Picture 1 (cartoon, rainbow, N blue to C red):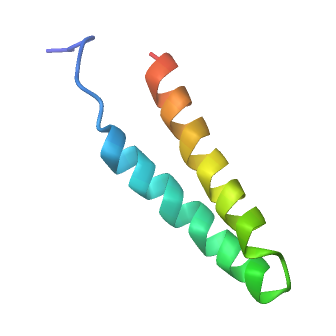
Picture 2 (picture 1 turned 180 degrees about the horizontal axis):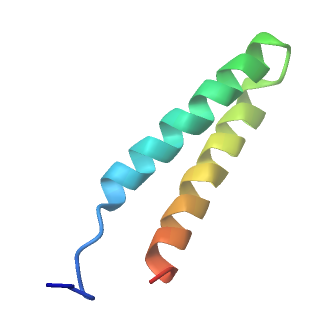
Length: 57
């Protein structure tokens, strides 16, 4: 019933994190933030999500 070794959906997690961070950074760009900084924040959010998804039970 409970599968401890279930496959995780890394693509879905990455897309969700990118969309969430992308919305926030889009607003930040509209307020004058540099676009490369916004892409860095989005990339960090995706990487953090994938790492947490991988190491959390």
